[in-house]
Each structure stands twice: as structure tokens, then as C-alpha cells.
Amino acid sequence: MKRNQKAEAASVSTVGKTSFIKNLWKYRVLCFMCLPAILFFLVFSYIPMPGAYIAFTNFNYAKGIFGSEFVGFDNFKFLFTSGKITMLTRNTLLYNLAFILIGNTLQIFVAILLNEIKNKHFKKVTQTFMFLPYFISAVLVGLLVYNLLNYDFGFINSIIRQFGGDPIKVYANKTVWPFIIVLVHLWQQTGYGSIVYFAAIMGIDAETVEAARVDGANAFQKIKYIILPGLKPTIIILLLFSMGSILKGNFGLFYNIIGPSNSMLFPTTDIIETYVFRTMMNNFNFTQASAVGLYQSVFGFALVLFCNWIVKKIDSDYSLF
Amino acid sequence: MQENSKIKLGSSDIIIKTIAYIFIGLFSLACLLPFILMISTSFSTEGLIRKTGFAIIPKGFTTYAYELVLRNSKQLFGSYVVTILMTVGGTLLGLFIISMTGYALQRKDFPFRNQISFYIYFTTLFSGGLVPFYLLISKYLGLKDNYLAVFLPLLMSPWLIILMKNFIKAIPFEITESGKIDGAGDITIFVKLILPMLKPALATIGLFLALGYWNEWYNSMLFLSAKVEYRPLQYHLYKIVNEVASLKNSVAGSNVVVTSLPLETLKMSTAVVATGPIILLYPFVQKYFIAGITVGAVKG
Image (cartoon, rainbow over all chains, first blue to last red; front, side, top):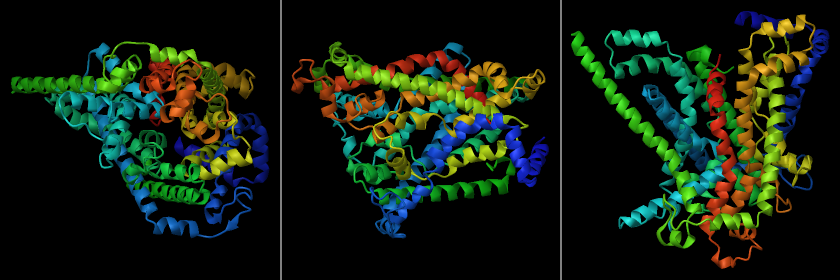
């Protein structure tokens, strides 16, 4: 089947221009059906790509991107020598690694536990609750965190006060935020993410599980030797998908929790996206913002190619392209 | 021996089930807690909150904050209209384009399907970045302070098109073929034969689109300035939460002495009002949604 498709694709590409036009005409309706999407990505994704050239210019808004003076790598030089890029890359990478590793582990854990729960009502109600955080806007997430952690009347501090303890100035302490942000991320994504794993568990052959139990495997052995290996393909695919975006940050989460101006927390909470946004919107420094943005795109792209190359070496079935 | 293993089997089951019920129960409560805090605060008396902090049970139950939010409701009402129009329009138009593209891209006889698929997929790998995107919309397309700048970019995403393509793949090709034999064109086949079979897919992807539109605040923040009369709902909430000035404006003219404004309870009640509908909608589509992710997300 797969070979057939490949042969078909190959024959399409080797036949000359005339058949291209012929095909275009023959399949004009299907081409027409794709046209809105083609235009959409052309305008919103492809046309901005050459605009990244702005990173090499001394940008002047009135003169436009290609009318501005070319300055080579000057914008990048500043960012690298100031250490900004190192800090931003470290934060973005570490946060995403934590999100991916801890996030997926917790999702798998929840999926396995959900599989053990036989009470239908309990399962339905808890799943509905766990799903809820996924449905709200980043603005609301920021507000809910504020509600919990605020110094003067935050829920956690009001409990601490009740027991006679000293309230914590969370919004002035940069070391606790990596933990808080990871926790909030887990809070919001776990219910949603566990569904895919749960579905994969449901797809595991019930007879295999039954046979293992008859052979005397206990519940822990069932999980270790049947469920986890059965989840392996799903885990690898999801991990690969997330590797592709390891240099992209969750802008809404960071921006709404930390806020645009709490610079005390920036050393541990600033990611590439929040920095680019502030540099552009608050300081109107378009060139530096786009230099960081281009660095992110190129480095991220290289990372994806590298991951894909490694996966292809190990097992080509799992590679993305 | 047999007996022995049966006892082991039983005890390990009990341990895991106990862990499962306790952990899942506690985690789901932790997911719910912040919402309860928000609702409870919105019904509380500001003075008591300032004295002792937020709590699970409303302190001095009052609907005062809601009265303030609703009394001067022109801005809020306008936000609702803008958001609902965008959500409904964007979801319908987006669904149509996404399913149309998804259908064409999974047709085995369509020679350009691989090229177009890659053209779409590539945009997830590389992008021009925020600055060129911003300049394109505001300078070159001239959409600053135009609702289209918020509406258009959310219409579709590569991920949703791939998801839809996977859904449609499950429909046998024979249906398209039989349509062709009966002399139907591609558009007729798509609209009359394929679309009606796609209900779970449309519900799932429609919910993703609707969520995107309802929760939109980012493009509004980038492109809609003070000149725009009615902000989309979540951007309105963003302003209320982050700017005391916006908070005061939102209740201006409602005969309240500004210094005595219940800032905290007002924020929370606005949040409840702005979030409500999407959460109320969710239980009705949850069934489709869960089934949908399950089918669509896992490859082949």
C-alpha cells in the first residue's frame, strides 16, 4: 500500500510540465477546495518569512523592511555579548523539558489510574473536573494564580495566617516561580493530555491482559509488562511531536502569570517569546525583537531536523518526514 | 501455589485501586478548587476579603460586584456581541475550509496531495517570527484596529487540518467512488456524502476553533488599541485584571465613589461572566470531544 503511494507520487513528479497543467485542470475542483488554505498559509506564514530579514537591518518603520539600512549581524552581536540569548534559551529549553518530561509522566500515570477505576460515575465526574482547566483562557489562569498566591489576600497566605504563620511574598521571590509555573502547566494540561494515553490503553488487547492475569501476574506486573510496553508507540510519537516545539514557549501562560513589568522575576521566568513581545511592544525595538525571533526559528528548526535524524537512525517508522 | 498467587493478585489490585481513587479524586478536586475560589470571591464582600483573604465559602454573601458589572454593561455587552460573532462566524467558516482541505488532501487520486500537505506542515517547523507577522498585519495589510486582524489568523492551523485529514481517512474511499459513478462532482460528493458522516470530527474541531475564538486575547492585545470601541471578551478581562483604570472605567457612571470600588470582587465577577458560556457549553460536547481526540490524535 505504502509502496504503491510512493510509486504514484514518484511518477507524478517525474512526468513533465504538460502533465502538471493537465493534472491541474483535471483536478481543478480539488485544487480549488485547497485554495483557501493555500492562500491562508501563504499570507500568514510564508509571506512573513522573508520579513525576518529585518533582523539584519537598522529598521525604520516609515521606510519599511526592505527600505531600511542593512547592518549585517550587529543586532545579533549585541544579544549574544549581553548574555540575553543564553539566559532566554536556557529558560525556554528547561521549562519545555520539564513540561514534556514531567507532563507526559503524569499524564501516563493518570491514564493508568483512570483505567483501574471501574465506577462509571466517579470516572465521568473526575474527568470532567480534570478537563475544566484546559477550557479557560490564559488571562483567567493568570487571575486564578493571583487569587491563590497574592500576598495580601491570596488563599494560601490566608490559610498560613489562620495558622499563625508568616505569609509568603511569592511575587517577589524569583526562585519559587519555576516550580509554580510547572505546577500550573500540569494543572492545566494533565486532564486533556491523559485522554490520548487512556485511549491507547483501551486499545491494548484485553485478551493479553486476561492471559497474563491467569498466569498469575499481579496488578503491578500487568502495568509494567503489558500496559507500559503497549503505550510505547504513543509515547514516542507524542514526545517527538513535542520535541518539535521545544524552543517555542507558552506565551500566554508566562505573560499572564508574571505580568509585563515584574522585572524582579524575569531572570527565572523570561522565555524567548515574552522577551520578544516586550522588546517589540514596550520598547519598540523591532530589530532586536526580530533578531531573537529569527534565532528562535532557526535554532528550533535545526533542533527538529536533528531529532528527526536521530529517530530515523533508531527506527524510521517513527520519523516525522 | 495457585492459592498463593490469587492472594497476591488480590492485594496488589486493592493497593492500585485505592491509589487510583485517592489520587484521581484529589487531583480532580485540585483542578476544581481555583474555580470555586473565583466564584466564592465574586460573591463576597470586599471588606471581609481585604481583612482575611480569599476563601472557599463566600464571606458575607453579596451580589454587589455583579450588580456593578451589569449596571454599566454597555462595554461588556459590546464585548459579548463581538466575541459571539467572531466565535460563531470563525467556527463555521473555519470548519468549512478545514474539512474541505482535509477531504481533498486525503483523496488517494489527488496528485498534489503530498506537496500541499508538506506546504501546510512546513509552517509548523519554521516561521518568520512575531515581528514580521506584526508588521505584515499592521503595516502592509493595514488591519490595525480592525477586527479582521483578530478574526483571520485564528481560522485554521496545520494541526487542525491534519486532525481532520485523519478523521476523513476513516471514511471508505468507496463512498467517493460510488458518488462519482452516480455522476456527482467533487463538491457534491463532499457536501452531500462526506460532510454528514463527519459529525464527531466537526464537533471536535469545531470545539477547538470555538475555544480559540472565545479565549482570544493575544491578537487583540497586539492589534486593537484604545480606538476600538468594543474589545473581545478575554481582552476586556485582561484589561480589567491588569489596569485599575480600565476597572474604574468599566463601572463609570454607575454612581459609585471610585475609591470605594470593590476591586478584587469586581475582577472575579467579570471573570465569571466572561468565562461562563464556554464552560457551560463544554459538558454537551465533551462526549464527542473525547471520542474525537482519541480517533484523530493517534496516527493511523
